[in-house]
Amino acid sequence: MRRRPVRSYVRREGRITRAQQRALAELWPLYGVDPGSEALEWRQVFGRDVPTVMEIGFGNGHTLLQMAAAEPELNFVGVEVYRPGVGSLLLGLQKLGLRNVKVIMEDGAQVVCARVAPASLARIMIFFPDPWPKKRHHKRRLVQPELVSLMAERLQPAGRLHIATDWEDYAQHMLAVLKAEPRLRNLAADGGFAPRPGYRPVTKYEQRGAGLGHTVRDLLFERVA
Image (cartoon, rainbow, N blue to C red):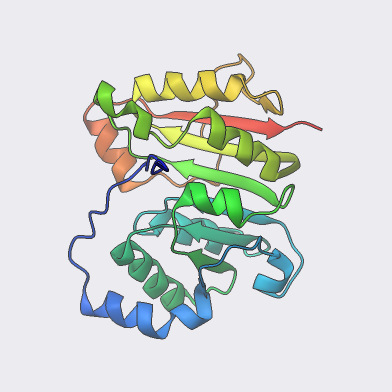
């Protein structure tokens, strides 16, 4: 019997608004990347040859919108499975008139595995993934050795993997996994966690966590030759 892969998420679609539904119907042809099994060529996807960065699990898209607006010289690929979040991002892209963002509505791990060519991304970002705090659910956590190895392969030389979390035990797990990947080098001076880079906005989720006494940890690693 073939085993089903362990997913790092469960579908909690929630309520989708009429505006989000309209955005999915009307704006997807402009911003969306349809499902497929072949690796994508970013120059063809965006119609220009500039560095491409990817955010896996962008939620409602607020952080991705801010980064894309602040760095129009970069291509941004957002990956998310939740339709309301994708609809929200599409509405934001239309409002801001951004053209440097494309959206993939598929599982992030599968996208990295099948749709991203080796050495094709300048940056991969995962901000505040589901911590799955119960020990019996830790196997569902997104950041695992297999995915980290794939992401390292998909980064260009000197490309960066940037992850952030406010769950301390998950942060320690991530740090150990990233340190064990031989193709990645920790950019933190002390070999631990890094200061928040200026390009990463402070999110509402992060502010709420800080109010609860959570310490936000940024991990910043570089692809070595």
